[in-house]
Image (tube, rainbow, N blue to C red; front, top):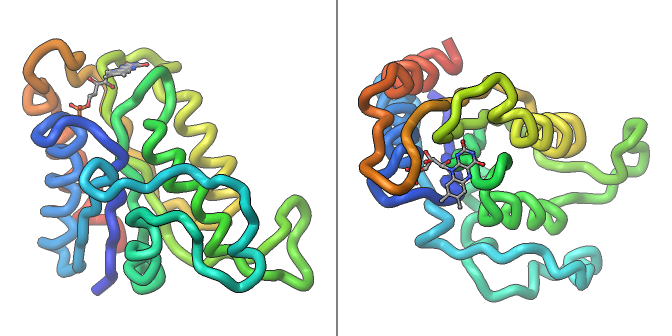
Length: 193
Ligand SMILES: Cc1cc2nc3c(=O)[nH]c(=O)nc-3n(C[C@H](O)[C@H](O)[C@H](O)COP(=O)(O)O)c2cc1C
């Protein structure tokens, strides 16, 4: 049994992303894992202000939900980042959340090439929805995830689920007319299989 924490970086309450996350969580729970979903709309996390107080042993000075999420991250085996695609990348809310990893970094006396500090060892995954479904639709988002979360922070990538063609935000969410919910269920169910 693994502990999975889903960080949902936005989207409508019953929108495409929320449905994708629910299917992923159902699959993971059916496989015996414990899943908690945290919405960054309900739990506001602001971007880093670069004050560097966290580099002097203090918790983050910002008064928002981040400090209460840190213990949940510490306990989790896997962080699943979920987001609708906004202007070709992850939402500002999810980007702000990732910036705050600055204050969970620890001193590393011998960092590997290109890294300056040590981060907790975790598995990670990326779940996204979008209106478009071209071969470039998720390019910037996936590139950022691989560069910042996998290569730099050092989390182990357990996979990405990129759900294009879900309909735009002018109408009802249309992910239920695609195969993505079934894919998300199987992704969750088999993530540690
Ligand atoms: C501010 C905004 C920006 C968006 N930018 C894009 C985009 O760049 N490319 C795209 O394919 N869809 C874009 N969309 C559409 C959403 O990604 C898509 O409808 C998504 O599934 C909505 O998620 P939700 O139903 O969870 O809210 C955008 C929607 C909004 C509201």
